[in-house]
Amino acid sequence: TGKMKIKGNMRKASAFTPDLFPPPTEENFKKYAGGASTGGASASSGSSSAGGLPSVFQLPPPALKSDSLFNLMALYFTTGDAQKNVDKIKAVFQLDLIPKKGQPPVRRWAIDMKNGQGSVKYGVAEKSDVQFTMTEDDFIAIQDGKLNPQTAFMTGKMKIKGNMRKASAFTPDLFPPPTEENFKKYAGGASTGGASASSGSSSAGGLPSVFQLPPPALKSDSLFNLMALYFTTGDAQKNVDKIKAVFQLDLIPKKGQPPVRRWAIDMKNGQGSVKYGVAEKSDVQFTMTEDDFIAIQDGKLNPQTAFMTGKMKIK
Image (cartoon, rainbow, N blue to C red; front, side, top):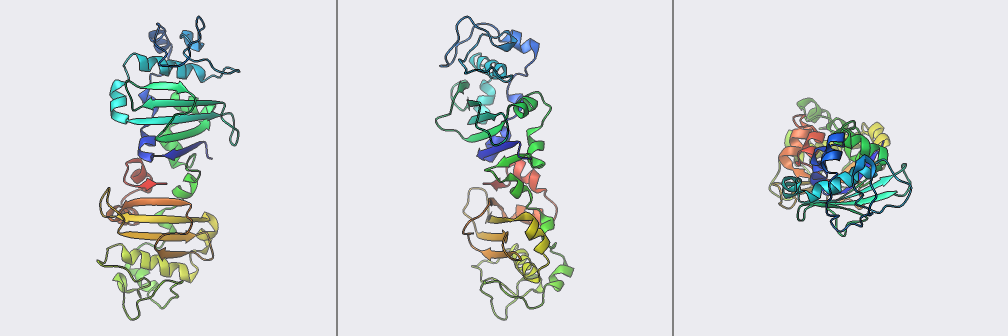
């Protein structure tokens, strides 16, 4: 449903959870109602925000329900209570609240959990690691614990770079599982779809080799060979018509190392295709280790779990 849009570092995005801040209870409003530094924000002298807190920010009308939450957050940072989380998170979050999908922000907040004891500023961060956009109601629901941000992601309610729905559609069941039966099924001659065929040679699984790949051979090569031949049969047409996306998949040997294989999987055009190399224009880019990709294809690793645990990077 696109309730939340995210740009930036996804591991840091997944760290931005309601438990980083004091819940908006009467007890916490009372606890932080004492005088506190504004942390550089303009204080409205003598006025109070909702919850009985001294107002830290001068905000344009009309007042929003969420204003008191950011006021509470700002005063919380000044106490030093957030230091442990700041030392752990090391990220600056930009949070833009919109009244409805497609409308411009009514509030823009920069939440710094990287520097000093942390701070929140009304406006735009000079440099942020992650940018969130959501409705005010959804933000309040997350803070109240009524909407889980991870659930929002996994159910397609959260978008990453405008295309999380397409990212979450890239699941193992789009392709034939690497069983002996499927290797036999697709072992017949097939068009290479523009890829260079290695005449007379065979890939793992007994399939004719569709691609000329640099050595050394990788365990996953046969999976992409199977995928390529699968597309040539037209069996994927229904999924191609449904998905309408081009995926770039980069496989790395270990975290932090450059890709050993780069694959462009087109599920937008024609009957679909897979090409060794980089897509001219992709909707979603995945980066993961070869072992994790194989585990996902074998059904041993859930792709959503892989993302949430940092095993899969998505752009």
